[in-house]
Length: 441
Image (cartoon, rainbow, N blue to C red; front, side):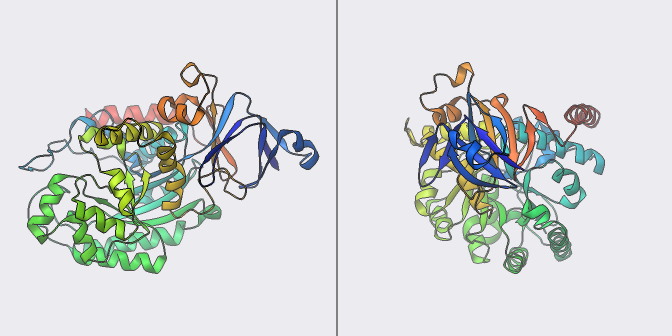
């Protein structure tokens, strides 16, 4: 079956953004095979199923390069319980996340997936321990996924929490086994819609041996890696106290930095650390919404100038990448005291094209001939998106999740005219509310 999306405004990127009008996207299987004039559809593709996108725009879907789906359970609570940004660093004052069953865990993960889809996400990197427990349920959403199993070998204490960092080698071995098992079962599943990455938790949660063995496994499997880096000032102090250096230099000393690394946060860095990360061409996942909630923000344009690739992620409690994109632009403009930079085009590129590339997904993240058919259809006939003088600027500045009408991943609709197709949205929302009410009480 060939699908033609006709009459919409096509936002495409090829060394710069352009808006194509009076043209149609032609999709066969999971690939955009052509973009042609509307008048040519009947002649070239007479059997195509035509989707009318009048008064709509077709955008690339968002690439969420750092999230934890099950932390939807903490929504409304953890946002207001951030750790201290100034010494002393007594550890976390927030309450612990309640224990829930495997089945309840799956419900919270699917809640996050539904929210992601409704806000236009087409690919997400899920970072967690024990992903095997819910991978099968999560993949049913139809999202493109990078599943990054996370390891920590610290015996006691959490990230940003002071104290001597001691290692349990068996914890590390168990984590490496989980990574290998996840890779064996899920890597390149469903024509590579699902891939697997690997994750170290954080510099103050992973010993030198842990970092080196994870990197060795990364080289063996040839996958992306990720880590929470310079997330908190308490983490910075921990590394200084235990290893006499900075978090980024600690990773460099243990061979963890590379051009397939997605470093999440990078909010508490020295200029020297920014230069080191740029030297390795690592990606920084700018998790702008959680950064604002934490009262911290990275030096994004500086990191980019030093050589880092910039992508974006939602992190905790909120899976709305529209909010992430807009918040990132606002925060960086405030930091730079510059009302023009970064531009909407730059930030949109971070949240789409750059994200796909950083997750190791080739031929995707832009609407061009030969790209994977990951896209969203947005209703432009909205007061806040009118006048349509610059629809890309409007989308970044004014877009809302209910503007997203339909979402396609790998050539398949996973949301059509606001209806989630692969999951029971009402049931999952109802069950998630019941779980949260019980466990937080």
